[in-house]
Image (tube, rainbow, N blue to C red; front, side):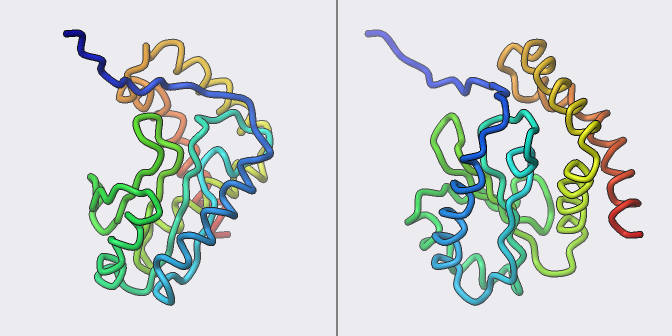
Length: 176
């Protein structure tokens, strides 16, 4: 008997203007699933930056009033196709994935005033405001895909220095 293992294929593709509509549709589903606890639901990550090459995964940032109230809605979030992953390595975060092995959506939820909210917003807005940096980032990600041989940990490590450097600059720029 042959066993087939599902392996996530890491790819970085050119910007797709449909990503915005995909996010907007998902925002409606998430708003209904979470209810009044959601303060703000935003498109973040590379798919939110026009012209930026990206993994075709819609990253979503949710600011909530209360994480415990969000946890109560996990069944609603599962009902719209997400896997509940808990903090998944970041204290104070709630993380959800959708789309099977390939991941079509990642949701990062934080309670209001968590510094991770600012970090995500700053990096997104910085890339939008600095298109040369965004182009450099896209090219670097395409190279990282080639070098990573489908290992997500290697891919992330290859991006890390760029992200660390520009995240600091982004937060400085964002808070001026």
